[in-house]
Length: 155
Image (cartoon, rainbow, N blue to C red; front, side, top):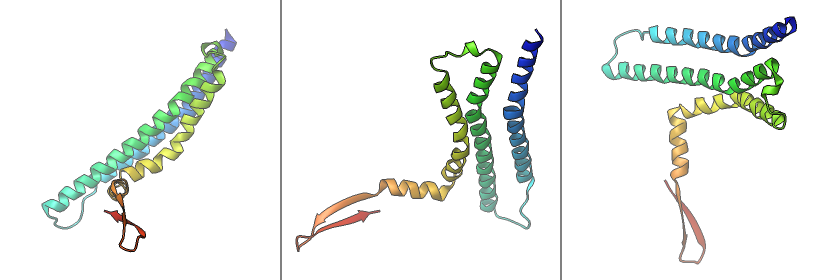
Protein backbone atom coordinates (compact mmCIF):
# COMPACT_ATOMS: atom_id res chain seq x y z
CA UNK A 1 0.00 0.00 0.00
CA UNK A 2 2.84 2.39 0.84
CA UNK A 3 4.60 1.61 -2.42
CA UNK A 4 1.40 2.30 -4.36
CA UNK A 5 1.06 5.72 -2.72
CA UNK A 6 4.69 6.51 -3.48
CA UNK A 7 4.17 5.57 -7.13
CA UNK A 8 1.07 7.82 -7.33
CA UNK A 9 2.94 10.64 -5.59
CA UNK A 10 5.80 10.26 -8.08
CA UNK A 11 3.43 10.21 -11.07
CA UNK A 12 1.50 13.28 -10.01
CA UNK A 13 4.55 15.25 -8.87
CA UNK A 14 6.21 14.53 -12.22
CA UNK A 15 3.07 15.76 -13.98
CA UNK A 16 3.08 18.87 -11.83
CA UNK A 17 6.76 19.66 -12.39
CA UNK A 18 6.98 18.81 -16.10
CA UNK A 19 3.58 20.02 -17.34
CA UNK A 20 1.44 22.02 -14.92
CA UNK A 21 4.18 24.36 -13.63
CA UNK A 22 5.64 25.25 -17.05
CA UNK A 23 2.17 25.75 -18.51
CA UNK A 24 1.20 27.90 -15.53
CA UNK A 25 4.39 29.97 -15.83
CA UNK A 26 3.69 30.49 -19.52
CA UNK A 27 0.08 31.48 -18.84
CA UNK A 28 1.03 33.89 -16.06
CA UNK A 29 3.84 35.55 -18.00
CA UNK A 30 1.74 35.95 -21.14
CA UNK A 31 -1.18 37.19 -19.05
CA UNK A 32 1.11 39.88 -17.63
CA UNK A 33 2.20 40.80 -21.17
CA UNK A 34 -1.43 41.01 -22.27
CA UNK A 35 -2.45 43.17 -19.32
CA UNK A 36 0.50 45.48 -19.88
CA UNK A 37 -0.35 45.71 -23.55
CA UNK A 38 -4.02 46.39 -22.86
CA UNK A 39 -3.16 49.21 -20.48
CA UNK A 40 -0.64 50.75 -22.87
CA UNK A 41 -1.73 54.16 -24.11
CA UNK A 42 -0.16 56.00 -27.03
CA UNK A 43 0.85 59.49 -25.92
CA UNK A 44 -0.62 62.51 -27.66
CA UNK A 45 -3.70 62.90 -29.76
CA UNK A 46 -4.42 60.28 -32.34
CA UNK A 47 -6.98 59.89 -35.06
CA UNK A 48 -9.73 57.31 -35.12
CA UNK A 49 -7.84 55.29 -37.73
CA UNK A 50 -4.70 55.28 -35.56
CA UNK A 51 -6.75 54.14 -32.56
CA UNK A 52 -8.34 51.37 -34.65
CA UNK A 53 -4.91 50.27 -35.92
CA UNK A 54 -3.68 50.15 -32.32
CA UNK A 55 -6.68 48.03 -31.28
CA UNK A 56 -6.02 45.63 -34.16
CA UNK A 57 -2.35 45.29 -33.18
CA UNK A 58 -3.33 44.55 -29.58
CA UNK A 59 -5.89 41.98 -30.70
CA UNK A 60 -3.34 40.27 -32.96
CA UNK A 61 -0.77 40.16 -30.18
CA UNK A 62 -3.30 38.70 -27.76
CA UNK A 63 -4.26 36.07 -30.35
CA UNK A 64 -0.59 35.18 -30.88
CA UNK A 65 0.03 34.88 -27.14
CA UNK A 66 -3.04 32.68 -26.74
CA UNK A 67 -2.00 30.42 -29.61
CA UNK A 68 1.53 30.00 -28.25
CA UNK A 69 0.17 28.96 -24.84
CA UNK A 70 -2.39 26.62 -26.43
CA UNK A 71 0.25 25.06 -28.70
CA UNK A 72 2.48 24.37 -25.71
CA UNK A 73 -0.37 22.82 -23.75
CA UNK A 74 -1.58 20.68 -26.65
CA UNK A 75 1.88 19.51 -27.71
CA UNK A 76 3.03 18.49 -24.23
CA UNK A 77 -0.24 16.93 -23.05
CA UNK A 78 0.14 13.50 -24.74
CA UNK A 79 3.57 12.73 -23.25
CA UNK A 80 2.41 13.95 -19.84
CA UNK A 81 -0.68 11.73 -19.92
CA UNK A 82 1.40 8.82 -21.22
CA UNK A 83 3.93 9.21 -18.39
CA UNK A 84 1.21 9.36 -15.74
CA UNK A 85 -0.50 6.26 -17.14
CA UNK A 86 2.83 4.45 -17.33
CA UNK A 87 3.72 5.39 -13.75
CA UNK A 88 0.30 4.52 -12.31
CA UNK A 89 -0.14 1.17 -14.06
CA UNK A 90 2.04 0.14 -16.96
CA UNK A 91 -0.54 -2.48 -17.98
CA UNK A 92 -2.92 0.31 -19.05
CA UNK A 93 -0.79 0.73 -22.19
CA UNK A 94 -0.75 -2.11 -24.73
CA UNK A 95 2.73 -3.66 -24.70
CA UNK A 96 2.69 -4.24 -28.48
CA UNK A 97 2.37 -0.52 -29.14
CA UNK A 98 4.15 0.85 -26.07
CA UNK A 99 7.28 2.08 -27.87
CA UNK A 100 5.31 3.48 -30.81
CA UNK A 101 2.95 5.38 -28.52
CA UNK A 102 5.88 6.69 -26.48
CA UNK A 103 7.70 7.80 -29.65
CA UNK A 104 4.63 9.57 -31.05
CA UNK A 105 3.96 11.32 -27.74
CA UNK A 106 7.59 12.40 -27.54
CA UNK A 107 7.54 13.68 -31.13
CA UNK A 108 4.41 15.65 -30.37
CA UNK A 109 6.09 17.23 -27.34
CA UNK A 110 9.21 18.12 -29.29
CA UNK A 111 7.11 19.66 -32.06
CA UNK A 112 6.23 22.39 -29.56
CA UNK A 113 9.60 24.01 -30.08
CA UNK A 114 9.25 24.16 -33.86
CA UNK A 115 5.64 25.29 -34.09
CA UNK A 116 6.23 28.71 -32.49
CA UNK A 117 8.14 30.16 -35.47
CA UNK A 118 5.31 29.02 -37.75
CA UNK A 119 2.74 30.67 -35.48
CA UNK A 120 4.70 33.92 -35.44
CA UNK A 121 5.17 33.84 -39.20
CA UNK A 122 1.58 32.86 -40.00
CA UNK A 123 0.14 35.66 -37.90
CA UNK A 124 2.39 38.24 -39.57
CA UNK A 125 0.50 40.01 -42.37
CA UNK A 126 3.47 40.52 -44.68
CA UNK A 127 4.52 36.89 -44.39
CA UNK A 128 1.03 35.68 -45.34
CA UNK A 129 0.87 38.13 -48.23
CA UNK A 130 4.22 36.95 -49.61
CA UNK A 131 3.26 33.31 -49.15
CA UNK A 132 -0.03 33.89 -50.94
CA UNK A 133 1.80 35.71 -53.72
CA UNK A 134 4.27 32.86 -54.05
CA UNK A 135 1.52 30.27 -54.52
CA UNK A 136 -0.62 32.34 -56.87
CA UNK A 137 2.10 33.04 -59.40
CA UNK A 138 1.40 31.51 -62.75
CA UNK A 139 4.17 30.63 -65.14
CA UNK A 140 3.67 30.88 -68.86
CA UNK A 141 6.07 29.44 -71.37
CA UNK A 142 6.09 30.87 -74.84
CA UNK A 143 8.11 30.46 -78.03
CA UNK A 144 9.64 33.67 -79.31
CA UNK A 145 10.28 34.61 -82.94
CA UNK A 146 13.81 33.13 -82.90
CA UNK A 147 12.49 29.73 -81.67
CA UNK A 148 13.96 30.14 -78.20
CA UNK A 149 11.77 29.11 -75.29
CA UNK A 150 11.15 31.94 -72.88
CA UNK A 151 9.47 31.87 -69.53
CA UNK A 152 7.66 34.73 -67.95
CA UNK A 153 6.16 35.01 -64.54
CA UNK A 154 2.82 36.74 -64.12
CA UNK A 155 2.37 38.33 -60.71
